[in-house]
Length: 384
Length: 232
Figure 1 (spheres, chains in turn green, blue):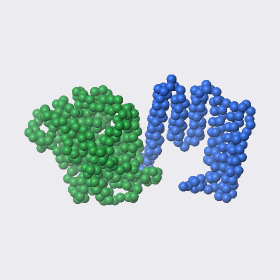
Figure 2 (tube, chains in turn red, cyan):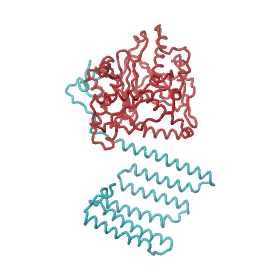
Figure 3 (tube, chains in turn brown, red):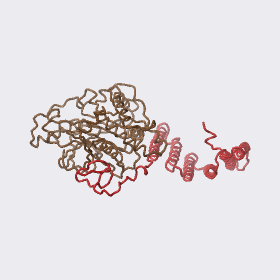
Figure 4 (tube, rainbow over the protein chains, first blue to last red):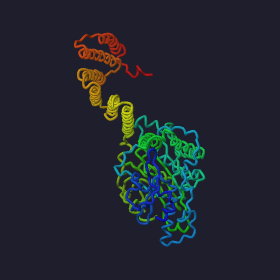
């Protein structure tokens, strides 16, 4: 880990507090290596001085890395993990002749890797239109610790075949299944207040901005799009949802459209009034704004990191890859992450409610569509 | 390979219970375990949470206001002067808002505690301004009378079956009574004797209108709803 972390110096930072802003300061302490606990993604003690903002977790043959979003996103984290696994395998005597695109220890660190993509590609654009509040899952929260993880595995070929038949991408298909399941729960909860019925179903779908802009940054550079289903207009068939989600994602992930979100996010931190506001006020205000505005805008979250590719020699040594989504909050109570490796696609749900209705509806839908779903045991025994 | 027939999924080795439906897949006779909170036990977290967020936000605004007033007073004058009045007023307003947010629909508690909050604020204002001069002879009885008058109207609103112009008429009568009591209290405090003047004019002006409203309500319309009357 020391060798790998040395190659990623921009991750060797901790969070400092200035009068007006937080800042990242260089920290030569290595991240902790921890034994995997029952609950993943526990909070980082970011306020502690010299506290690294990522950690490596092990259990049996499984290696995980957990990053705070301050540092990087799923794309950057995956590159680190691949490099870490490569280093581990070579140190244990495995020979990998063609490491491919893996970032190797000892290779020069490019300045581009640590650049701030948001600032680099910022241009002042008109803000995106305002959104009405989204409907939220009406289930009771779990007692602490709240997080519940349900993991499943399906065959890439099966979901790909159905997606191709319907002429949509895997992400579009899965988001549509998610919407269809949410709509079922929404309909079941009829009669719970007129206000609830005035809202829409909306899903946050993160977008890897490295695919949109020419950058090699390893720092956090992701934004999200928000496809929605306006249930105030009536009930939708799955085909209607699929068509709508397909077009919405095509339009909203267009570089011009997504640049508006980037512009909107960065514009706030450029405002003079925000810049001169003391940090403690900023923290109070942003906490209230996040709870009352941001997280009320969407119902759930689906992130698809795509297909993980490794050199052929490494593939034989690694059984599976998996992504755990950012733990949800009290408003957006459920999140889901997809990641494909070789012929398997792993689906991982993070949920803080006592209900498994979302997962049940989604897996039932996939199963009815002819996709074989295997629910995985969380007591991990094997695999990396 | 274990299959859950409820959910249509395969369960991994070692999974005795399906994590989705909570059912033992091998026990075919067991009824499907329906999660207790779907859809019948759906909770209304929204309103509670909204009230809590509103309370937090109001707290930030109120105490920022207190801090700003205190700092300005300290910077512009010698010590704390006018800011004490604004601090007491803001705190009282915040306490009252808190009551409305958390004692939601408990009218008796809201009215009682609101009265106590206002009386406490007035006591401190008196203490700061004059060293406890007018609170007991004027502030306390006037506030108490106001709440009695308002409370009477609220009780009538709750008790009366057909609500309409009769409630407005009751409010007018309570208002005229409150004016008379207020003038008595002020007269006794300022002049030492009672000489009713303006409150009687208010009462004489209002009472015929109240009687007209009663007549309209009970003889002509027989209980038209307030929201229908004032619908825009």
